[in-house]
Amino acid sequence: MKEKSLGISQSLVGATMWGASSVAINSLFSITTIPYIVLLFFRLLLSSLILFVFIRPHFDKRALFSISIFGVIGLFAAQLTYLAAIYYSNATTATVLQYLFMPMVVIYDLFRKNRPTTLILVISITFSFFGLILLSVNFYSTGSLFVVSPVGLFFGLMAAVSGAFYTIYARVLVKKEGFEPTISMGFLFACIPATIFGLYPSIRYISTLSAMPLGSILTIAGLILFVVIVGTVGAFYLYIKSMKHINSSDASVTASMEPISAAIFSVLILDIFLTGIQYLGAAIIILSIFFIQIDSSRNR
Image 1 (cartoon, helix red, strand yellow):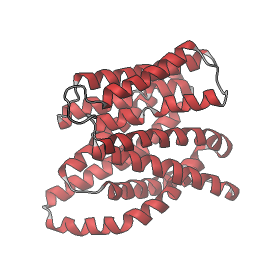
Image 2 (cartoon, one colour):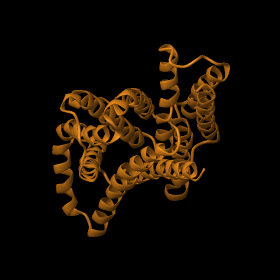
Image 3 (cartoon, one colour):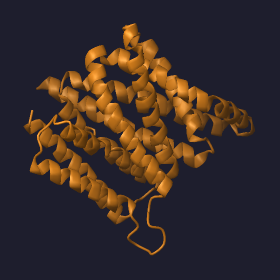
Image 4 (cartoon, rainbow, N blue to C red):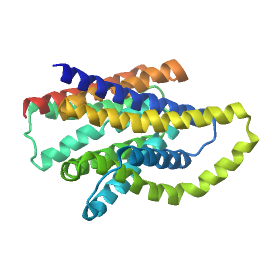
């Protein structure tokens, strides 16, 4: 019982870290002109170095190709689209949109016949996408169709697709190669496209910092380190470590703290509020995913 409580606590803290990190990212985009590709470069580079030094993985060279796919198409794409979604919308909206990866994974499992089709599952999936409509569609005026910008909505949904791929692909890879080499080497491979696209913009951005006050530079550096240490290394470490004490379904349910904490911190720190209908849509998505995980536990 103590081990399960420890695991749930670790998972909750890890998910909360992800939510808090999204608000720190939102803050960076609000107070500075840092491009999201530059933040992606710093986030992946520093995180990969910390994870590699901390874990010191032992890996099979024959697995490098599979891990490279996980790193580039999984980690890099998921981080890129998520940061872009925050950049073009806000932390709360981007996090909830990204969280739709869970119903996508379930739909994949249904097509692959990896889990039985149940009434609660069908209803939950249907309601999760109904929640998406409430979150993104403008019900208040005859102007724009979307209350979220079309670009922000696109990247948010692509973050969900990337997250679904990341989850599905990682299932087999982690089971076969182990979590430590998969995540540490995966981050290193994710640095390759991040460096290709982000190195030159990062150099240009760093050159502009000389014109800023020292206080502003320290604030930017502090937020980037928070995103790297708390929102990436710490969150991944705690969330995955929790699975030593609880099953993946329990961990997935507690991961609902990510969009909840993102919404709370956005209000408290950034004074960013959604509309009433948007909050209803977000709540429907989170509850739908909760019932999806309950259904998963019952059918194990």
